[in-house]
Image 1 (spheres, rainbow, N blue to C red):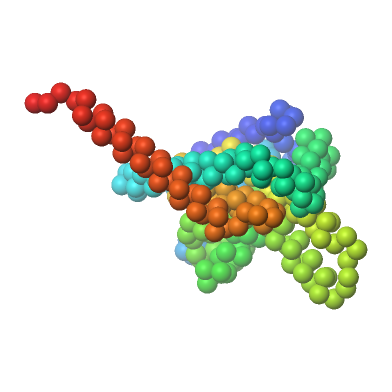
Image 2 (image 1 turned 30 degrees about the horizontal axis):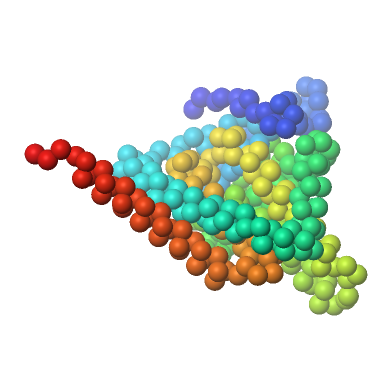
Length: 307
């Protein structure tokens, strides 16, 4: 199989992603040897009926994941499903903007401590991301969380993981089970936010944490922003996870579930917006769009010349 070198650039610096600090001939040989071992491990795993879920980052060479060949009927079905998901994303965005754009809502929501603390966390993480400080460490943490999310959903689906690899060049797991949830979960599940909530739950149950709620919300804003910015950085890197079920379909699923997560956070932070109200508004907007579309089609049909 022909190899290709991925020319990956960071959107924030427009430079190559961070290379390993190990330079010289010795470091190069070690990286080549490691990649050869990874390829052999994956080939061996596939012969044993295992599936690889991988994330590509940095300047890693393609390790031979371009073997997802969907049949034309499967491609057509996934394109149709993606086109059906697009209106769901559009309606969700409209519902968010309808509520967030309400002056009365803004007057109360923007003054809540939840919104202020969450925004502070987002601002700190964005500043850190675009500054490039500790970029390799953050990239490693993201890859680790990405592969751990794959592994957790494999176990949730009653599968098993036989191997996991994490580095700043990318990572992968070998598993005997694969489905849409396992493949795409790292792109809409903020792993480190969940870890943070678990740690906070354990600590708060045993001790009182001064300003714990405010600190938690700041850190949640930071970890959620960390998940979003690194996910956006990773997706253009020709990810094998997206190819498994079709790139367009996978992107629509990722966008929809991230919008659902964002809607949930807005409902949790708002003093007067609940899931019930949000869904009611969502259903009303959907019905209005369907009604408008039906009227437009009826008017277009009436203008057609009769035979």
